[in-house]
Each structure stands twice: as structure tokens, then as C-alpha cells.
Length: 184
Figure 1 (spheres, rainbow, N blue to C red):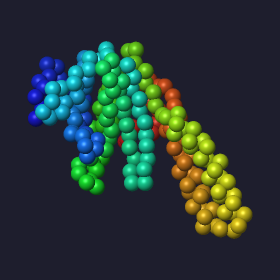
Figure 2: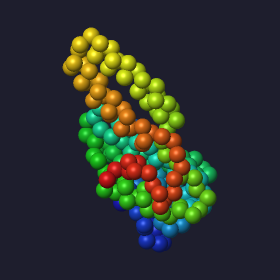
Figure 3: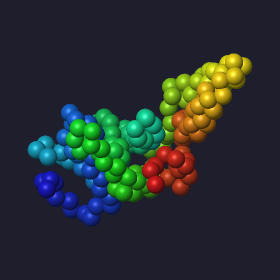
Figure 4: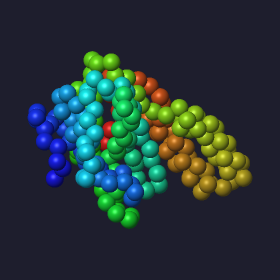
């Protein structure tokens, strides 16, 4: 158990190890602060008034999806995600605590001078350039009668188009959170 003793009840808590070189961290949200605890280290305490931005992103690899939350504070960045690294080739989906934690954080910050953003300009532009390339590849496969490739390219095109909305950079509020930015 971590050593930090709260004086007020916690609103939400999420623990995650984000990679092989990182220890597990516990993120605890209180009404007045965000506490990040790592075994054997003093807790990082971020007063709610020092939080400046919350940025949510969604990434997809061949193996799994990743939901990320980056919190910019006066003292640096706090990063967390919903996938826990439990060991080599062993990843745990911790959406059961990640989603309530991020929702509670957004509600706690609503109405404060905190910018809430999502998406990625780099990935959004990449996808916009990728779509015509995929369409061209499909047209080429169609013109030479390679129907299997046309079908595969069509599936690929649908997958890429489905990510455009999640990647589009935008601002939001806790009450108007864009769909697809938190695991359900």
C-alpha cells in the first residue's frame, strides 16, 4: 500500500504501469488535488488549480487500441492510459477504472480555466493524405481485375475513414465529450 494518507475521500483512482521500464503508478483524484503515487517515491501532488490542459487521444495498433490522457500542469505533464503492462506480452485492459477516473477528472475541472482538447494534427493530416492513396490503390487493383485486393483495400479504407473523427483535433467540455475518446 502506498504511504500517502488522504485527508478527504478520493473521487476516483486508477493504477497503471505504462511500459517495461516504468513502475506502476496510482493516480488518485481528490476534490482539491491530483496525487500520483509510485512505490518507494514521494507522491507527486498537483493542486487542481495548477492543472492547465487535459488532452485525450485514441491510437490503434494491429494488436489493440490505446486511450491516452495527458494532463498538463504548472510542474509538467501527467500521462496515463487504459492499458496496463503486466509483463512480457501481457497487457491488461483497465478501462473499468480509467474511464471513470477521466470522466471524474473532466467533471472536476469543468468551469475552471482548463483547456480540454483531443485529437492529433499529425495523425489527422496523415489520415487525410492516406485516404486518396488508398482510393488510388483500390482503383489500380480494380483496373487490373484483382478483386481480392479491391476488397482488402475497401476494408482498409473503411478502417481509416472510421478513425478520422477520433483523430480530428478539437476542444470540448466535460458536458460535451466527443464520442470515441474513452473506452466503454
